[in-house]
Length: 489
Ligand code: CS2
Image (cartoon, rainbow, N blue to C red; front, side):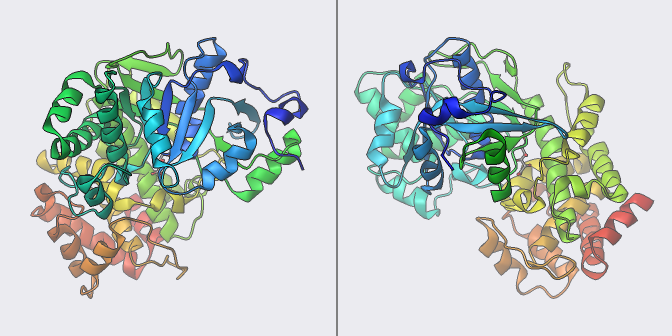
């Protein structure tokens, strides 16, 4: 079967939407670091929308910082891919034309630096996942002992990290008399703009304090809240799409209809008129906190408890009444720690979230969400736990989710099926847990170290006791029993 490409665009079935602009005349105003499925289903779609409306400055040069896989999928397709939006019953297919080129950074570091340093590059977006910022998840300090960061601290000739690329390119821009670009973190980190700025300035300072000052004075790192559920594509998705549209697309992404981007209105250069779906605001933090603690917090709880119960997909977990009750209980707890923006109706948001999680056509795997737990737990679960404990409140459901994460580290679910621990701190966590012989000792090992759990919670007896009881129950009777126990309370 033919591949999707510029040459085969006109062979697609009529119901497939395609770019309304001439891709050959597009300027490349955006560089994206970390081209995974999320970028293709989120930021790239907004830039595609802008160009469909006629402003052609916002083509994207995207980069993979590690693997050639996405370039190998997209290059034979001239950067084209299909966005498949599934609402639970019907699906809509749209060809996105915004990505003009994909660079594999380790193969061509100079090309990526040149792209970042081009005068036309006004915006740099990043989806490098929580661990890509090279900051300690518990303290936020630059991870001096990270081997890739150590390389970038020594030299920026061929950067290894996202902050390394930004610093090296900003130095080139400064030397060429250009302005900095606006660097927009699109990862699920609290204060993601400030974190990116910290990482960039921290690294720049170690190389050239004057450069750091220039970036601090002239650059911009707006904070953002990004939201769209984008499950990893599986082979069956590619085959089903090929049967439907008549060409094969190995770079397709599947997603839900929901799409939201809240961006702090702090740009140091040109920006597009983003249009619907993007909110520009002065205060992103309350949006971000609500999304991290409600959507992502529940997601992590669902991933560990559902995964332990041997359930493969999010919507199937929510088919278990006790699991739904657990999600509601977790939200009841987290909600009290929020200061939601006036425009956010939390009750409606919770109802919508439950419906989004229940979308049966997304096939969102619990194991996908379970990865990188050490990087996710602090903002999703441990921060609301700390806030509730500081107010003297209970943390029953939130600590069940954390106990689920500890149990997950054993590498087997309740049926004994093995899973990988895909986490940059996996080996350190395994080393912490190795000497422990029972649930109480495992909790002591995790809570007593500052690897993931913040210090404020170290001596909190209520939190420790809750964790100990849940972990014991998870180890002896399993996740379904623990969920039933929570539902009876
Ligand atoms: C998920 C997120 O994998 C995960 O950790 O919680 O990717 C989630 O789907 C998105 O943040 C939704 O906006």
